Amino acid sequence: MKKLNKAYKSIGEVAEILDLKNIKSGKLNTHTIRFWEKSFKLIKPKVFNSNRRYYDMKTIDILKKVKFLLKDQGMTINGVKKILENKKSLRLDDSSNETINLTDSNLKTKLNKISKIIKELKEFK
Image (cartoon, rainbow, N blue to C red; front, side):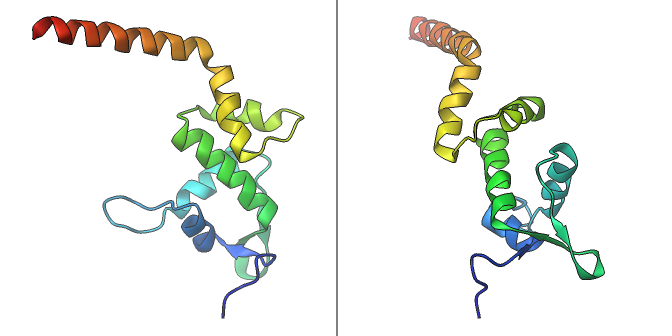
């Protein structure tokens, strides 16, 4: 029987939802979620019986944002903290636009470097 969406999820279920798997072993990386709990004040699991962590949908949404910004966008923990502490609530779709705006000068620098490398490679032909 499947749990309702409103039900609390265990740390293993959340790791599966976030697709946090070790590439080599294929095992779930629950330690990543525990690390994020220590790094981000907004991530507060409920601790019921036998000291097990349980996450509600609000917390899972925050974890999805954290994963997207850290893993997909390559932001630092401090950068993600600044975005999460921002008063306006970011939807996951808005996060990528916000990230680009925050790193616009860095993006231009990277694009210039890539252009230079492409020109050098063309010269070798």
